Length: 175
Image (cartoon, rainbow, N blue to C red; front, side):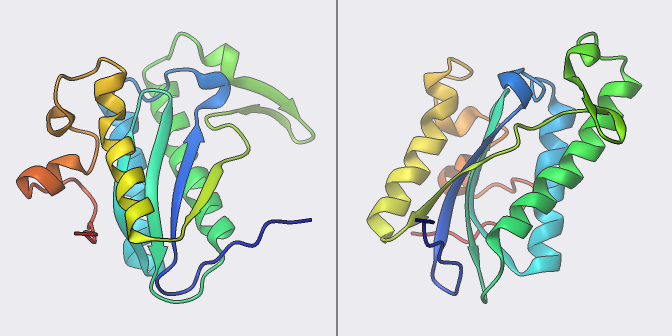
């Protein structure tokens, strides 16, 4: 039986997707900036609501919602496809040393993989659960040893919540 996904007004999703083979493809600032820029573009073009995000070296977390009914899987596919295209171009430009490990053979020839095919999606059914996931996501860089305090991490929405700083994408705060 297929799980029901709710995408209308007031429904939010906690999503996580990972780099291909959990490689740290987002370790440098430029790929992180690309992921945020593509997300910002989707906010403007698709009436997407972003409650929060965290871009880690090998995966991405976000809480997303919609102003009106949308196909959530299509939005996720666009985010991954466009960010993949720009990250791939960046990695080729800098002559990324592990580019060979990202290449896979497809029916149309060789392709460079940036993301794992699937993503994790959790419908947030209450504000309490959304806050729990937002806090988890913001603490992820601390747990990974990247910073001592969550608001120090440049690549998450925590700085918006704690210091009201711009984070590269419009945030629709929960609280």
